[in-house]
Each structure stands twice: as structure tokens, then as C-alpha cells.
Picture 1 (cartoon, rainbow, N blue to C red):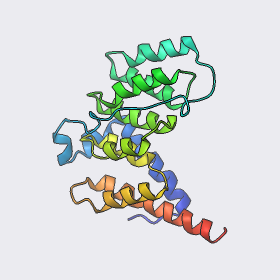
Picture 2: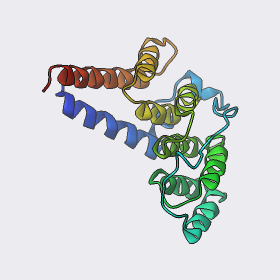
Picture 3: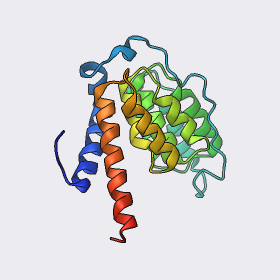
Picture 4: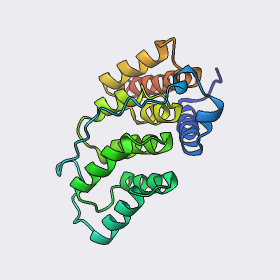
Length: 196
């Protein structure tokens, strides 16, 4: 494995995940046995984005209308654009956010599902860990990459990262990125523990 400083490793990991997920590169070049099955593990998840998790600014009706229109498009790129806007926590009512994310997380297009996972994590909706755990079981590599990138440094996330690294059936790219993330988290924890 390439030796990089912890800071550079974190930057490289984020860039690789972002590039692979956005370009769809992962679905074509890094396909693994799991991508043969087109069923999403996210189909059974119920999304909860209540007011307490949403942003505190007043809803913008025009912005919400635009997001709803994009999210309902037949074009996956427009659905991804809507989710990208939600990931920035625009002024959209939490009920609308919940409906859009619920539909998007079950979308047949893996790029839309991946962006939905990212938007869900950025919105800070309830049951985030459950969604990320299920997204790591998705058949599309790009969705698993977004879930991996969205995992934090808490105990549950670290345990899940370790599980991914040890999973014999997981794509090597995912295992390598999970291992890199664990290294970065470990180095960060050591730095904090040493008072540096």
C-alpha cells in the first residue's frame, strides 16, 4: 500500500471516493460479484427527517419547487442534482426532504442512490447509521463508496469499517478505502490522545 502522511491519506481517500462515486467509474471498472444482482439493500428503509434534524432557516417555496421538480425528473442526472442541493441543507421543509430522500434511496439508478446516501448524511436525519449500514450492502459499488465516506469516527462506525475490511466477499477497492479510513481515524485519535 502507498505510504502517505495521515493528512494526505485522508485527502486522497476523500478524492478517490468522490471521483469514483460521481463519475460512475466504480460501477464499470471496479465491478465485483455483488453488482451482478441489481437489487438495492436500501429498498426497505424508511427515512425520517424531522424538524429537529433539519436546518433552522425558513423554507423557500421557490427553491423547494425546483428541488421537487428535479427530484421527480426522468433524468437521473437531474435527480442527482436535486439531491446535491439537499446535501447543502437548502431551505426546504423537512417533510419534503424526507419524501425526496425516501424515493431517492430506493431509486433504480445507483448514482441517485449514492447521492441520496450522501444527502441523508449531510442532512443529519435520524437513523443515519442504519441507512449507512444498509447502503454498505448495496449491490452498486458507488453506493457503498458513499456510505463508506459518510461513516464517522464513533465506535459503531469504526466497528462497521473493521467489518468491511474483514469481509471476504467485498470488493478490494472498498476494503482498501475502509482500511485507509481506519488508519486516518486511528492516527487522529492518537494525536488527540497525545494532546498534539
